[in-house]
Length: 132
Ligand SMILES: [Zn+2]
Image (cartoon, rainbow, N blue to C red; front, side, top):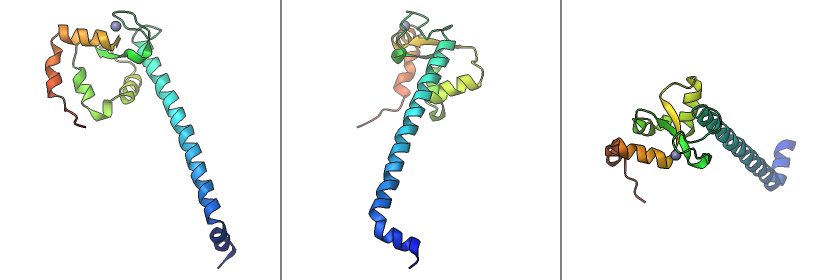
């Protein structure tokens, strides 16, 4: 048995623990920076579509937790049903495309009111129902 293998055999537990700790530490660090990046990207895109500070173009609420992108002429379900365009992928896409026209920042309440007023709710029933 060579020295490296001997060392591994006698220090196996320590080595594995150290590897695991390093993995956990990097994972948390990476997740934190991904989360921060996604929040930054969301604020940037929402800000663009509301002309500065992210806010609902209809009621003016500025709480970013309830804000999202609304398709001005409807059709949001098409994007939402495309797995590659869900959540932050959609914000990334909007930024990459140079902020195309046809979108605005709206809160979820105003989006639901708009859908009901425009009778866009017909598509809700077609969405996949999740069972627990
Ligand atoms: Zn609103």
